[in-house]
Image 1 (cartoon, helix red, strand yellow):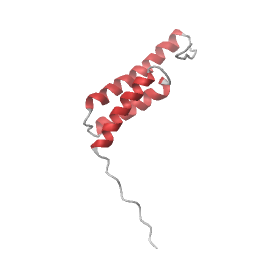
Image 2 (cartoon, rainbow, N blue to C red):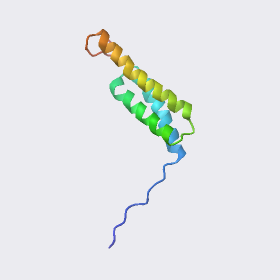
Image 3 (cartoon, rainbow, N blue to C red):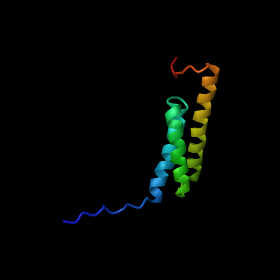
Length: 90
């Protein structure tokens, strides 16, 4: 019995469209909660989508900008609170 690897699935433009939308949504949500986690994930998804020539480049760029804004927002809040963590509800 000979084992072979499963056939490779081509990542199409539809996959990158989902990545662009996901980066936008995660970047937007990251402005409110979990910006340390969601910001870098939004940045990574946006960069991958842009490198794979997404049909939604504006949405990917917006997700990239929001991901960067997540990290900047966290840095400002940490600087203002002298390193203390914050929550959206108090």
